[in-house]
Amino acid sequence: MLRTTTNFGFSQALVEAQRCLSCYQAPCTQACPAKVDVPGFIRRFREDNLRGASELIYESCPLGCTCGTACPTSVLCEGACVLTQLGQTPIRIGSLQSFITASSPLEEPPPKQKSQSKVAIIGSGPAGIGCAVQLNRLGVQAEIFERDRQPGGMVTHVIPAHRLPAEPMETDLMRLQNSGIRFHYNQEVNAAKVNQFLNEYDAVFAGIGLGGENQPHQTGMQAAGVYAALEFLQQARSAAFGDGTPPQLGKRVLVVGGGNVALDAAVVAKRLGAEQVLVVYRRSKEEMPGWESEYLEACSLGVEFRWLSVIDEIITNQDQLQAVKISQMRFVSASLGGRRWVEHDSEIPVYTLHCDTLIFALGQTLEEGIQEVMGLQKNAPLLPVNEGSFQTPRPGLFSAGEAVSGGSTIVACMSAGMKAAREIAQYLQSQDTKGGQHG
Image (tube, one colour):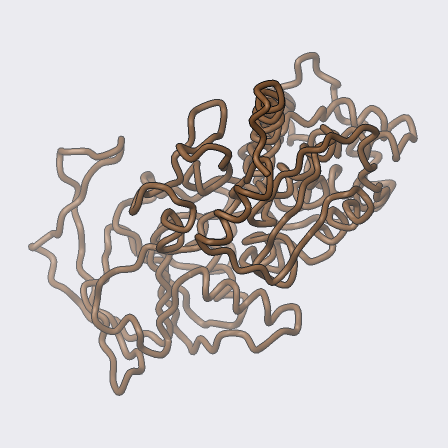
C-alpha cells in the first residue's frame, strides 16, 4: 500500500530542501489530498525554522509524521514535482515531512473558544482522527470511541512494519494528549450504542473503514495455511512488534489478487523468508490496480507473477493446504468498468501447483452487518452519504473515509474526515439556530 520509510539526517534533509524550486501554485501541493503547503514548509526549514515548518505541516495534516512516512508519494506530491519534467529526480517530500515532524513534535493546542456541542466519533482511524482534530479546532467537543485497545484503526493493524514503524503514529497521537479530544478504548459499538450516541450527542461521525474482505466461495477456505490478506498482514505486523508469532509460511506462497494489499502480502511473505512467492492475478499487468512502485518493490525482492490466472480449486489433506488447481484466462472483446473482461481459456489445460500458504487479497468491504448497526440500508456496498455534506440518510449521522469512498490512502481519509467535520460544524450551527439540538 505504501512506500518504504527513509531516514534523513539534518544535513541530508537540508541538501534535499535546497533543491526545491518554491513553485507558484505548486503542483505538489495540488496533488496532496490534504493540500499541505510543501514549498512553504520547505522554505521554513531552509530558514532554520523547524518548529514553523512542523506547524505548517500539521495545520493541514494532523497525521503529518505518519503521512510523511507512509504516503504513496510517487503517485501524489512527488509524482507531481516539476523537477521530473526537467529530467531530475523529484524532491523527497515525504522523507522531508517525516523528518521535520519527528524532529519537532508539537502539541495540538486546545481550542480558544468552546461551544456546548459535542460529537461522538466511531473509530480512531485516519478519518476519525481527522474529524476529531478539525472539530476540536472549531471548538466542538470530540469524543472518539475505538473498539481496540489503541488508536489508529487499520493503519496500526495491517500496514507492514517495514513501511510504517510504530514511531510516526505515536508522534502524531502524542500531539493530541492535551488537545481536549477524548479517547475511549475497548468500545464495541452496536445498534443500541449508535442510538444512544444519537440521543446523547449533537452529531455522530462513523469513521469505521473497511474491515471486511471479499472471499471466494470455495471448499478449503478454512484449511490451515489459507489466509485472508488482512488477517495475514495483521499477524505479521503484530509479530514484528513482539506481539505473537509470525505466520508459518513454508517454502511456496501464493497470493491471489492484483491490488496494493496483494502486493503488500507478497512482499511481507518474501521478507518473512518464503523461498518462492507467486502473485496470481486474473488479468494482465496493464489492468493490475496496484501501484507501479509497489509492483517494482515486489519484483526487486524476487516475487513472481502469474498473469491471466485463477485458482479453480483448493486441494487439502486433513484440513491442511496441499496445492491448488490453476486455470488460464483470456481476454474477450467486452469490457466492464473500463477494464477488459476475461473468460476461461479452454485451450490451455488446468494445472496443479503445490503450495504451503495461500493468501486471498480480493478487495476490502464493509464488515458484515455494519449498515444495520448504523441504522442504514442493509447490504449496501458502502455507507451512503449526501455528496458535499457527508451526512447519511439518518439525521445527525455523518461518515467519510473508506467506508464511503471504497478505498483510499491515509492522507485522503484523514482529509475527508476534516472536511466532514466542517460540514458537521455547519450542521450544528443550523441546529442551534432552529433550536433543534439532540441531547
